[in-house]
Image (tube, helix red, strand yellow):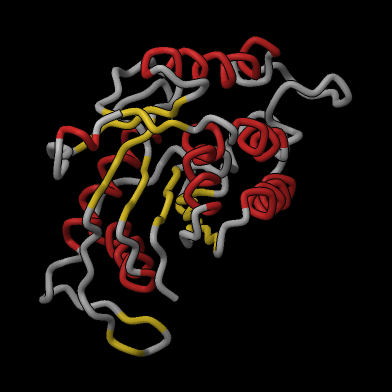
Length: 238
């Protein structure tokens, strides 16, 4: 199964919080999108791995992604080494995405920066023919995504480009709030965390509104790049 986009996050909910409106927009345009979670988020203060798994499945259903997988890396303790790189390479070669969306290049949570570099390195290594990987006992062909873009998370990072996601914020918020144990929910009794406040929930909307304001639309999602963004014509820019 070939994907157009593979969105990768260190934890279940990273993708939803950061780039799910972009994903929803591309799916509406006929693109096939998958999500790969690196960990189960087992060290999260609220909820359990079981509730997080169910919430991730519900969020995937809301967004309409083609596939969602979890590599089960150790939350907070995974590292950028050969074993972890190869696990991601196997998934990249399995789905052959043209575009990979991944964690912020640096952020409040240490897993986000680590996940960003790990994913970026794996995307490069996946194109090397002498690295052998297998899927169901069959040797995989090398595959390197054409583009690797990093979404923005807790920290306010200046984006290199902004996607117009006007009209897709409702589905983004629905996918985020599928994580009922993680975010603001007055109906559950869980410890307070930086992401469980009503302020944080509101920030999802006002950050998108502010980025939209800056590019002259209702809402936007920002990304940073590893190489220059190229266009055929200056008229491609809006």
